[in-house]
Each structure stands twice: as structure tokens, then as C-alpha cells.
Amino acid sequence: MTQLSFSEQIREHYPQGLTGIFATGGTRTTFILEQQRNQENPGHIKDFTEYTSYGFNRLFQLIETFFSLGGQNMIIPLFSYQGFYERGEEYAQQAVRMCLRMIDGENVAFYQKHMIDPYFAGIDTLLHLPDDHYAHHLGVEFETFQRKWLYQDGRRKIIWEVAPIPLFSFWNAHQVLGEQAHIEFERTLEQSTDLREMHDLLYRYYARAVYGTDIPMPQFYLGSNRNGDLKLRSMLPIAMVCGGPFRMFFTPYPSFFMTRETLQAILEDLAFGKPLRSMKTDYSNQVTSELMEMEYQRITKLSADPNTTLGLVRKNPSSNPD
Image (tube, rainbow, N blue to C red):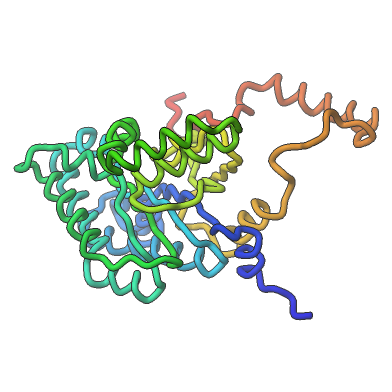
């Protein structure tokens, strides 16, 4: 009997499609380390066009790797609504031009080559802005692109998150899906007496409204915590996870330094590692008193040191004035 490849095992394990959130971090740091670390002023990025092209090339390499390992759907934050306010007008306008590259000829060719359907979620916020606002133009461009794209069942999907405010999208769901869909949803929800079914009904309804397509609830989140703090950089899917089975992974370095082997190890652990929930009442016959004594000593030692807490920002010793 022929042994299944890793990608085949993943697709068999997730018949609805393995869906991941990829919140890439440290893109500027990656560019500086790989392209400018030996310059006199390595931290200065004088050509943002070069930096953007470099970043997108690395991002699409990651996309290609995930799909080659058996993945089916990706949710990728592209730009947050806070970005329009926190780094100044010039940066925000550069970001808008950067976002538009997601629908240029080169990236469209990539989608077509890899049989990917792209979606742009969260742009309802941009369309809400005044018509003469440059960010409103971005929303119109993405909306027009989606209206013209020939979507097909069975294809891989990339959900690009662009300036989402989840509560605004949920508030808009009724208007987006229409009166009839809302009536049918309410009737089905009222008739449900199974909490798991209610959870799934609510997710499908709001995911369809927010993403513009049916997509499974993500099984994992992959981010970067190179500074130690554990940030959640993806808003829409996190708002809809609602306590479902879900794993979170963080690399202690910028995302684009992650190798194919590491991503495969993450997916293998996700799919075939320890189950998320134990069905047993306790740990009867699974541990010994000797092991419990060792574990007690380990935990009390960790708890005595505040710096073992995950999420604390790491301090750079060289920046300490003392």
C-alpha cells in the first residue's frame, strides 16, 4: 500500500480544508537584516518600493509553502484601520499603494497559477469613509475586483484582511446577506437546541457576511513574538473563533525567517499531536508520585520568577542605561 505524502495526510485529516491565520511580523526587520545589515545606517529604508517588493516576494513564498504542505485556506492581515492614524498620513498613503499591489497583474497571475480565489474582508470600513478619502478609493478598487473575479468552488482561498472593524462587519451582516437570508437564519437558530449546532450556525452566518464566502473556522494562528509580547494581529477570525478548537503558534523571530521544515512541524503537531481536549475526568493511572514531585518542583521554580511569564516584552540589555 502506497504511503500518503504529508500534504495528502493533511488533506485527509482536514476534509473541509486546513485553514490558518498567518499574521506575519517583523517584515521591516527582515528586510534590514537580509538586505542592509552591513550598511552604515542599516535601519534607514530609503526605497520603500524595494522593501515592499521584497516583502511581497517573501509573503508569497510562504503562501506557496503552506499550500504545498496541504493547506487549503489562508487568512492574512494586510493592513489595520489603526495604520491610517498611528504613523502619519505619508505612511498611510504608502500603505494604500502597497495594498493595491494585491490586485496587480503579477499577483493575479499568481492566484491563477495556484488556483486561488482572493477575497478582501473588512473593506466595509473603507467604503464607509467619504468618497473623496484616499482609503475609500482603496475599498472601491477591491470591491470592483471582487465583483469581476470569476470565483469557483473547490479552489484555495486567501482572505486578505484590510482595515477591519469586526463589530462593524457584524452589525452590517443583515444588510450584506439580505432579508430572506436573515429570516431563514433566525428561524433555524430558534429551532436549534444543541449548543454545538448553534455555535456552528452563528459562525457560518457571520463568516459568510464578513468574508463573502463559506470558509471553515480556522484551526490555527501563526504569528511572531520576537520581542516577547504575544500580539493578536488578526481581527476578524479571532472575533469569530468563540472558544472553538484552535491552536496558536508564535515564532521567536520575524515570520519570514521560518523554514519549510518549521511550518511542517507546526502543521504536524496541530494535526497529529495531543488532542486539544481530554475526554477523561482525571489523570488516573497516567502519572506517578515521583513524576508529580518533579513537576511540582519545576512549576514552583518557574512561578518564583516573574520573567518566565509569556507575553512580557523582552528588554535589550544593550539599551539599559545602567
